[in-house]
Image (cartoon, rainbow, N blue to C red; front, side):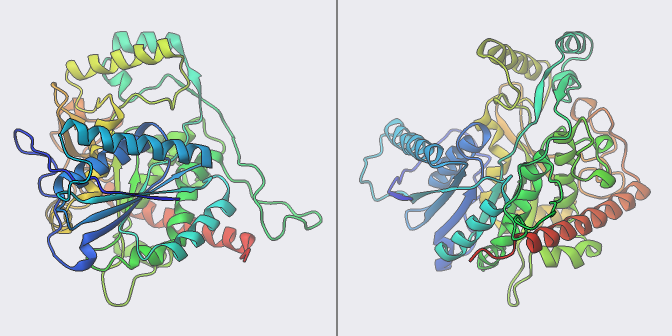
Length: 449
């Protein structure tokens, strides 16, 4: 399914834009045509990421450029509805800025919808094969889709923590109730019909939030490597709730954990931030085989701050009450309450569209970081480095010393050389386990062609 939409508009704003430096630095023909894929695009943060990608691409790219935005949802109905909403978004933006429908002054946007169930590895495999045949390259994949696995909230604990520990209680919450031990349905393997055969278990949240994406990225690695002007980008969407205390490599799928969501987000941080370390390269190079004549794809991790979505099951009254509490948290000084998914999409979109020189310069000077969406008191968006337990801000001992308490999680500790070494060992162990699991499941899935 593909739709070409010539939506070319020049946007002007007062003041310096966060995205003012996102224009490509080179002028090769390949730069003129960008291919970006967003998973879980039908609602919430995923849909807002698509809207923001469109807005910022049109605002920062000249008329000679085009964007093919590939969205994934779990079924065709959601795909159709999402494409329709994105078209409406483009048309509303045109009317708002008084751009004629046939104006030749703006970059072109093409929308393409695909379906995938990240908890169904055969579905993931099929999408990867389809994209390999359908696309010439992929500049960026934003790994947004996922599940929360929340059963509800402990309302007594909600009340108590808001009264005694606000706003941290709604930044690093302890009152969510989780399902434990959820596993995916049976996978369609080449051994499914074997007598007495039993599949390994796959944790639902582990598969939807990490492993399904991991298998997809490996499957489309050639497309990411075909982005030759700049390295292909793998943008993981993490969370502020990526607590080191709930993660264990002995239960990497969090099947026994009452914090499977938080565990999956900690694993996301570890994989992305350790992906460029020398010690992890034997495994990273198997996951993303490097091309011969140019730089291999780069992995980044972002988070949306705290925004109001339907990840926690709430009725509409409680949803709006939650939103009001989030605004209050911002007004009393929280830097992380973006509140709306559109503002939460700030960091992933910035990483997707920033010039490679800017990203490389930041990492060269300050180390690889976790890029978070935040706001000031007035709700103006900004992208900022976010502290990660064992990594600090950029993987350098002492780089998180003196950070304001309002920006730090409860378990935060100043980074030491020993802590940094432990993080690197953890990264290598996680990459080894993930590669072992990928190879095991690829053997079970076989090739259905």
